[in-house]
Image (cartoon, rainbow, N blue to C red; front, side, top):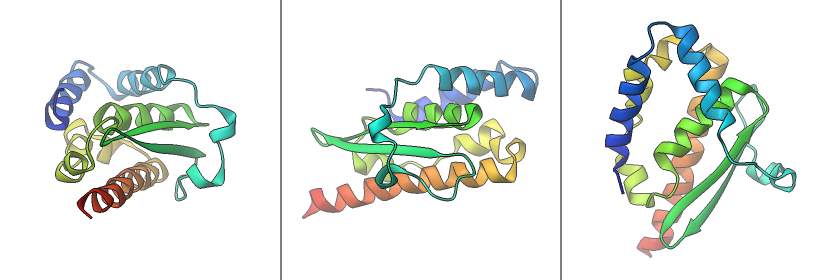
Length: 142
């Protein structure tokens, strides 16, 4: 399996193919459209990520030592950001998740081009993924 670091590099290269941020936003929205369906029964408080202006749900599951994430949002761009996060972090070991910084945010320019509320939401989603990884990493280490 390709490492998170290499996927981040590929992601940055993909975004560098676009000349302007309108096209990059459209690409993000398209990524979100490709997410698998997220059942309505999973849209519960236990999986809701607070701190996002849009409604966001991330459902973690530990599968054979890897963390798998299913997620969705009611906002198109946020759903695309989720798709990026899942590309990077889903089906990875907690150790790999915790060892890899989200360098793609600055490399792509998301830190400069997302609205403050979307940027805040992205960080809350990342925080949740890292928290899940930390909790499961500790469970495995015990």
